[in-house]
Image (cartoon, rainbow, N blue to C red; front, side, top):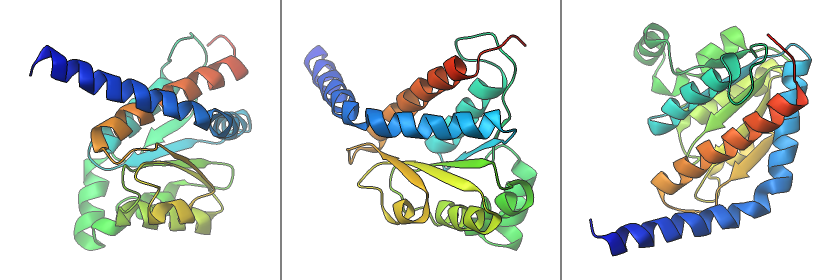
Length: 191
């Protein structure tokens, strides 16, 4: 890859990050959902497929362990981490149920389910959002490509204005890190 090509790719990413400034009021609102969930004893549940599953695990870790501040652990779980549950649900119930089944078992009113999808079209995430609604669990989705059908199934969305999977994922993680900062500043305290 040439230097010029790298510079062009970085310019495109910087432009997208700049476009995401318009999401600041929405991010503040979503961060308030996270804060309210944790302040009231709820749990943050994260899920996604592929790279978004890795993001779900990464984010749950930021809340349980720490991000920028040494503080008490916050309740957070990534639904993509239990291979036995994932494979059993996929085999016995169908892949579209791998997250919904966990939501039905684990999520309660007062919790928050955070879904990550670059397309908003993943059947297993749509089913998870529907299961959350059935459990009285609030939902937020980080999306791209206009949001897709998942946008209509959740309480709140953060839609990165891009069609490119890699850029959407980079911005999802960056925006979620900003939310972690807001949560840590709103819920300070020593461990």
